[in-house]
Image 1 (cartoon, rainbow, N blue to C red):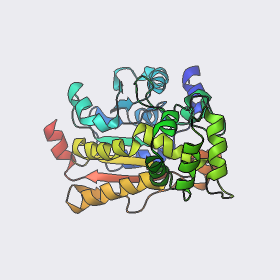
Image 2 (cartoon, rainbow, N blue to C red):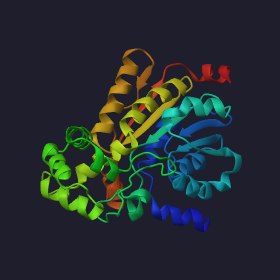
Image 3 (cartoon, one colour):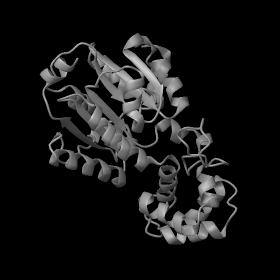
Length: 312
């Protein structure tokens, strides 16, 4: 194992790898260069597992985060032309496939939310435990979109309360929004955490800032909008009998995935491989506590492998 690959494995552990691979490859007939799209390639953990699992597989990895892509490129370099990495959102999957001349993928994997690297880098602003001065929270810092601190200081109180309520499921969303607006300008992450902790709902299980920071991250990156578009794109793009596998980490994400798969099954686009979400094993959670909230749902598109081969 190369030093780069080994070091990255210590930075980030991909979640539910065996379950992901099972849904992608179980009952799948062998095929040359079967394409799997990793729509949130991050540091390449799941992509590496796919490539190691099947010598016939190739991976198209997408990510909005250029820093993650650079590290994934190092980690996956040993697989040569079996890997192609693109700076893009999975919401734009259909356009990416067309522009790169790729056929319909056999599988699409979406590992939602922020990565360990993003949470652990204080400069990115994702964590309330080590708050950054500017509280950026953008997945794609190459663009000119607003940061989380911009939203805190510029949005109307009513819209800020809506974001904290809908995306963070914070019971005291109105109180949080009111406190933030009255404290403007909120100068940095430390001040933001102080205000939120004083006004948010308190429980023994979670820091009071948890829900608001989650809500701001989702809003900054328009995660729900990207997820809705991305699920539709994945269901459109995947080949007959192909699979769409999604890992979510909180109830709002999981609800969108559940509803999209249920509706797709209702109208005959395929079948749900998971009627209820699968969860990580106790052993995995002990070894990697960040896996704890994970929920996996999988969908298999209608059609047969033979149809897919005929299309190729």
